[in-house]
Figure 1 (cartoon, rainbow, N blue to C red):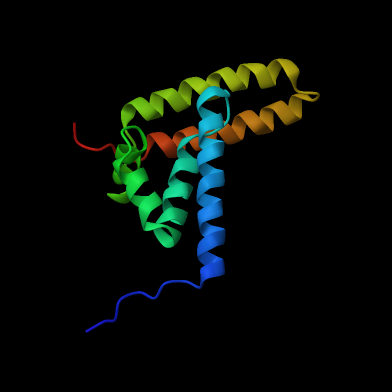
Figure 2: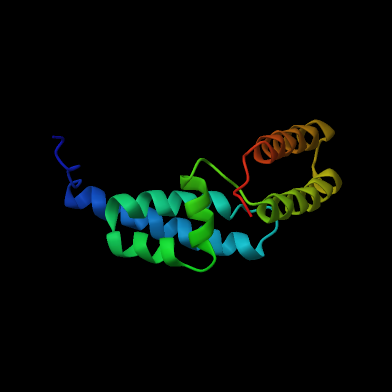
Length: 130
């Protein structure tokens, strides 16, 4: 029989709980600030909460907005089509802003190229069944 996983030391739990809360704040900012990611911060918060605070982890898992996202990711890295379209729209808006405001065309091309690569990766992620 395997023994249950050990709990990390108290200091590590506190640091992970702080990381989870920081990521939730950043995710909330990402909801209203174009170009700032939300999903990655929610997933990181769920990871840190699962290792530090069962109460926070349960709250995230049962949250009406975050819960489905977290469960989909845990079940094979799935991303809903609506989230893919939202990310695509946000990145397109950011690409236009960057193209207009970047101090150098090379910098704009590099940043837009990175966003395009992320979108290719995102659209290749499986989608959960309807």
